Image 1 (cartoon, rainbow, N blue to C red):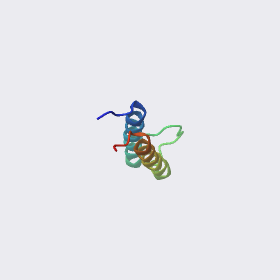
Image 2 (cartoon, one colour; image 1 turned 90 degrees about the horizontal axis):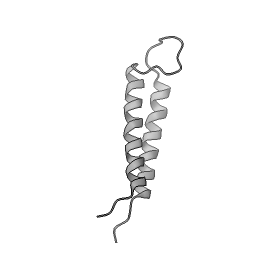
Image 3 (tube, rainbow, N blue to C red; image 1 turned 180 degrees about the vertical axis):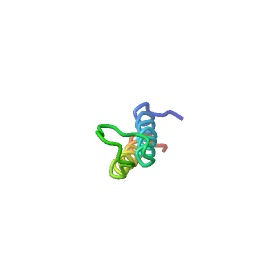
Image 4 (spheres, rainbow, N blue to C red; image 1 turned 90 degrees about the vertical axis):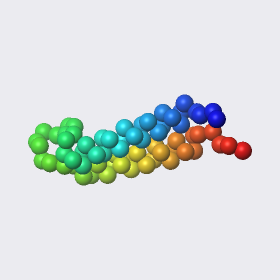
Length: 66
């Protein structure tokens, strides 16, 4: 079975977005923050949505079986 490198790249990007979302939700990752104000749930939701979008795009980019 052949797989598209583009689909694999989108899936990997989705996994990275999920990891970043989890780190934001736990309050570990604080990018561009001047104060440590705890977890940034809006950022976590944003990265979770980006992860879902990446997985959907990877599904459309993968080769279809006949």
